[in-house]
Length: 78
Image (tube, rainbow, N blue to C red; front, side, top):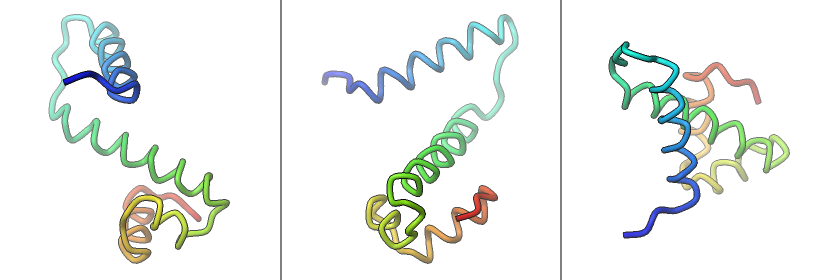
């Protein structure tokens, strides 16, 4: 299976993160990455939809209600 450009970008950032940590080991890395990625995706979807939550939700494949809950969780104002 070939690597997508998005997957490669995530991989590159994780390699930098580990390099910055040095000998320290991260804790709960998957949860941390999921939260960071979800926050970034929400922000980009809102930007691309000019703040229109219905369009952003459609872009993300979720309901507007779910989008609003996620925005609240991440403390993102729309």
